[in-house]
Length: 459
Image 1 (cartoon, rainbow, N blue to C red):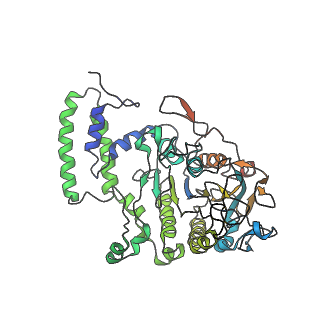
Image 2: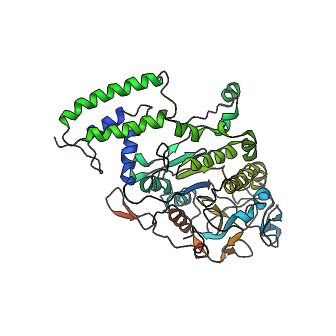
Image 3: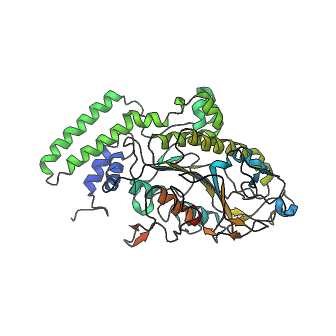
């Protein structure tokens, strides 16, 4: 019988061996082996990204592009307020971010043709549309490409981490499961709860592979590792290709990640002062953004997190009043914190959704008696950038007086992803092989945002 091989040349026996040494329940050595392919070549720049996905589609009117001079049926119910940059206004719901506008760049002319949730979110995660019914990736997401082409600057940490609430379409697809995100499970705000509160809330904050299998102590892990080592020693006698020696290296990395101090320190929110945790907000969004800052500070290359469901339609007014304060507080705290720590050149923050919202503020056609809101709208959307070496206090592009289409400097959504790749030192024209073996570019649309090309980290 012919030997079964994966596309990367791995035999079935190697996969089984790798699975056996995934001591905390996942095939971590296999993950490290796969990622080792990315370790050759020039060292990547010491840069990182925090990608905040506004799943559901954030309204440009109720965030960064209000239209105070427009009629009420376009303007909506919220007022525009001045930021700390003369001539730039935000929606009143973004009051804290308005006070750090001098550290932000707002793109007001991003667009793409779709208004369908799954295809648009898939575009925001990968740079490609998917079938409307797709439940998982049909192309690799940007974080997975980062995991393949970059290694974390701290080898004790994964290069790509997804923090809850995890946005959809964040997997590796054709790259293989070894490049899927290292996921934080549960809710980071539960780190501040008592055991009784945590049980009552039915929430739990845990990081897989950073806690040993229940009932397995560190000493037992050492013994089990020694036992596996003896099996591998016997295997070496018959392994003329020296695969067993290579496997030892990756098993060691897996054990380091499970038991070593680097990952535990990076993920431990209890290391943060109380005043810092309070500044971000004692809620899911705030503590997730704080965790994201800790991860990039300690050497993770790419952190992605969701915020909440921005698909509000006829309940937009109430939902924005209820939910946007947490986002506003956390984002303002993150931007200021990165600046205070001198991380605002190395770390780029990007916040964007699937698409924008329609200019008409009215009840949904499907529920004409409901409260007013806005429908899906791909023709224009706003995107927030912070850090990354970009000069703050700028607005790039504009929408028309109704907030419905770009008026100046229109750019496709994929251009934002191209900007992210370039910040990490990855050429978006780089190719990978899809499931059929066909070479595909990371992005087919990868134009520069020209207004940012003169910045230190631009283009």
